[in-house]
Length: 118
Image (tube, rainbow, N blue to C red):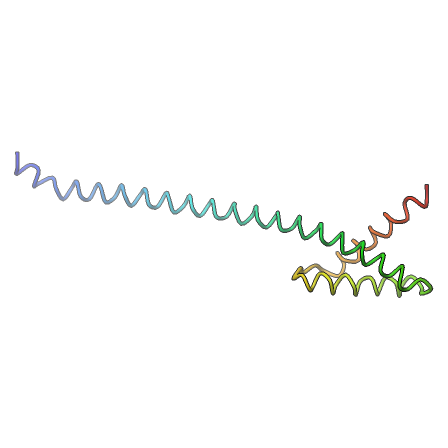
């Protein structure tokens, strides 16, 4: 019986090593998939938070420009609101294009004007 076990020992070792290697490969692949999903989830959460902050800052920028530059024409107010919003978002490390900032300020303007129209 002993010679059979000794003869089979290299085969058993090879099979066990292969199974452990396959399990490790599957585990690493699963970790990679979980990591990718976690990064996507966190990016989407940060995006939503940044969007919310963008709209809050845009509302502040609109109110700031309307209050400080009451007698100025609309383009000057818009320019000042854009400058304010860009500065505030930049100080928080949020990188958003000027077009997106302007759109958020325009949305804040329309939202502020909506009750006056009714």
